[in-house]
Length: 597
Image (cartoon, rainbow, N blue to C red):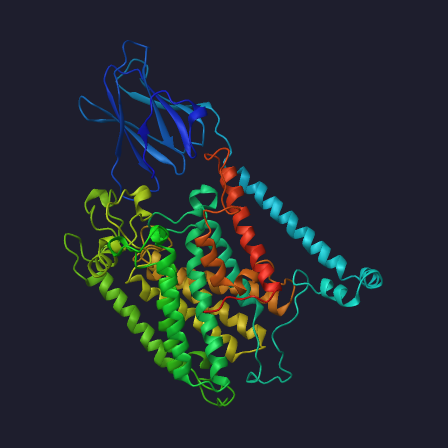
């Protein structure tokens, strides 16, 4: 929690992570009230920090030692206790473990107050471990790439063939860490109609899913305790806010391809829906278990059981989007007449009924968000409550979204420690995987479903697939710019992960289309990259996600640190834990072990 409190005479050696020492020296003949405001806190009230006694005499200051947070820049406000007038404001971004002095004095024996910040001890570079980690992983990547290239040289192949068993040598040369084998069957025809007999799997989709999952595991394990690897307190984006929507997006893409394949093989739609329903139920139940870990201590208590969660959101989204797809999917794609006017937009026109359903759902989200009356809160409120909005609506966190969850599920059955408490000091429980946000999760998955339709309708026509991906990315980016006014706070609908706002969905979908183009081009078109190491977790995503949640507190994923207040040690532990799951996924892939539900 980003709270600044007084710690008299705390030395720099005792400072914790993301803390700095500040000494306020008051030479004025009056007490000074010091308040603070994080520059990351939008329209917040200044919070009291302490009172510095009046100076005992001319040139002799009274002092007060404070500990301040270094994650974001902050503004210090100094007021006179006698007249409650503002003496000065100082905006400053403190560095971790730095020592600073703020001098408050009259300027040249006048009534003009001067406040100046002095750095007594330079802060440490808390971001240096990130650079070191990047260089280590980049070095490993280069070594593997060079090794794979050497292994493919004819001279090396001949030497290995002579020294070892020919079958084992061929396996080593064609290892998954090397050049990927093409998994997509190429059409020999120039026709835009894809063949219906191909049972293919695009490697880029598993790579994209694996990339999202690896980042998700890393940030869930702590992300080195850096603020930008944690979820944003309210409006805005951090690295942690990218990954779950991308996972939802690529799930939609996979739904399109898997349902199309099942229908092409003649599987009845009701049977496919039965499997979808069973899988959704399993996902939901697994999610309830892993986010309520007290089951290890005995029977689950309904009184405090959290109902929403990541896997629960995935289960609901999967069920809704797969049902929509089964409603409109065609058994065959090779019988579409090419002379019709809508042929160039067939990946949209053929599924107009599903689009109407999604538009209706988004209209419902907009109406509930902006028109639903919430007791003691302004209609259409999108703020964090707490000290935000100048403290006018402290019990309105999330507006309609929070109200619906508390009314429908009960306060004890939603997330009790939302990220809005970090800066905005909100009081109410709020669940980022709540009911209302699930509507926009469906929209996100449906946009991923559209990516799958593009792949199906323009199979092997790589330039057309990438062009359409980029067109969708551009259109969604423009829509995001309109909704947000290209700002973090001033837009009509700001980007907000807690709310899963419309602009959050359009922005992350824009990013997803662009990233998918890059991965698709490098993995499936040019074959420059095998997708390793992200490909392997992407092939076993449920196992990796559930496993990292269940075994989070066990060695080798966690161990006792020498210095728990070090970003470097946390980053090392979190990277090792994440890498371990990549290695586990690779071993399971080599042994052809996949957990399917």
